[in-house]
Length: 120
Image (cartoon, rainbow, N blue to C red):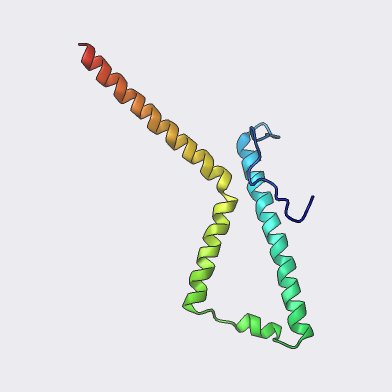
């Protein structure tokens, strides 16, 4: 695979299910997404801490005593929201599908009522 090759964000076709209860599959998918994110984060943090120590940039106590500014807190909150959205994407997609189905069912019921009254 070349450096410019990129895999599609979503697989085509139906999501495979491995457990009898599809909710378990969804939870497993969310857990694995989270585990992947945490693993990458830990590797990157380890790299930063090792480089900082190598170059005498700061100490571990500097990290522990750091107090973020309001701007940093806002940026972190936005990043956290995006992160949680990605992890819960599978559940959100299903909820949106159920909401759309409920709206369509409601629409169909309204049409049926109008047609029934019209025929009278």
